[in-house]
Amino acid sequence: MSRWKASLLVILATAGMTAAAPADVLPRDVLEKLYRIELGNQFSAASLPKLVSAHELLERYFAAPSSAERTEIAGRIDAVGLDRSIVGRLARLRIDWPALAPGVYYINQKSGPREVRYFLGIPKSYDLTRSWPLVVKLPVANAFLTTPPPDAQHVADIYSQWITDELSVHPDVIVLMPLLNLDELYGPGPVGMNLVMQPIFDATGRANIDPARVYLIGHSMAAHAVWNLAIHYPTYFAAINPMAGSMHDAWQRFRLGNLENILCVVWHDASDDEVKVVESREIVRYLRHLQYDVDYSETESVGHVPPPSILRDEYQKLRGRQRDLYPRQVFIQSDSAETIYNRADWVQIYQPMSPGQQAKVEFSRGSQGMYLYQNGFRVAAQIVDSHSINLDTRNVRVVRLYLNEQMIDLDQPVKVVVNGKIRYDEIPPQSTSEMLKDEVFLGRGWRYYTAVIDLDLTQTPTTHPAAPKHQ
Image 1 (cartoon, rainbow, N blue to C red):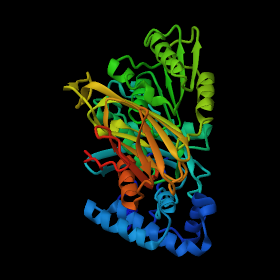
Image 2: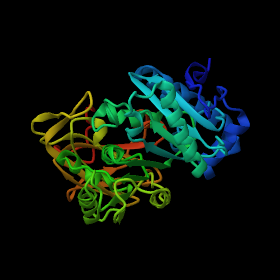
Image 3: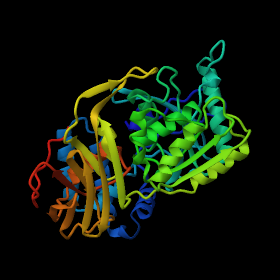
Image 4: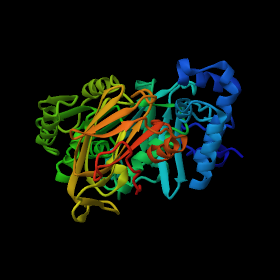
């Protein structure tokens, strides 16, 4: 049975919500069209049997329950004989994407240990052979804080209407709205953030979403979440639009530098009595000091809620940005004990040099806090040319760089200079297994990296760095 037959969509019986027939393997002509678009000049009609074979193995890889099975399947993918860069691109595509009908879907399923619950809006012109922008809108809680509170049917009606309205105004995007949990909200803790991020990851398995065009929007309490999600998951968004929001805690502001490759479209009104305008002003001032790309609009006498004209302007600016999936410069600064929050694009910090004491930050809402180190750490990375990379590090012991052929020449020695010293100067090893393990970590299809360079900065500089023990 197809996995879509088992758990494709749980559809609420509400007006405007549409069910779609589950899909098995896509027809060969549809797969060929997907491959042609995704691979561009790397596509060859003669290689179609190999592409299908590798694609089927990729589906088995990501469905495998154990690392041993995944390792075995990665070896079989290698045996197909495709270039790793082609395999990396194929991983974004699903061999059984369903032909989703236009409408609003409610997804409610288990993903590992987590419940994934969200509403997904599919536009009228949706075609699974094209990649589509994804707009993630975080609703505020007002509509649900009524007496009596809305029942499940009413909640579904509210979301359905929101997404229907959104699709009528913006028919060229897929729209996602996470189901709001009034206990966890959207963070700032890990559980709340996962209530947003896991639906985003899940949606890429249901629809053809372009990883270079994912946008995050929120107003008021949802704008607080937009800031927080972006600083913790800086790899995933092309642009964010926090309106009348704040991020004033020191542990959050410490991570503001992580927004280097995200366009921040910010709005606030000077007369806002609910969230003071100084909150946005201070964040924008700091981002501009870093010379980051930020668009700030401040109005007078509008109040806390932006009118439709401002919403249109902000949306247009947001959608104008397409993310560079493999930027030449990456900055990551963190004090988190969690590995997932120490990653930005192609840079992963695995271990600080001197972390100090570990402490737990508790939040006023949410079932979990966050564990932070006493001492922060950071990496500023730059691809200088096709053969060299510079790193400026502070308090970093173990760092891994992920690379592919779009970033650097992997057939020649790559020189990595760290704080003025050559730490690596050889041809990086490439590995299908490592590439796919990273896709499991980041989320399938968001990026592919065929080569890795591991650096233990406590060692004497050498051209043969030892591989770290990953957490």
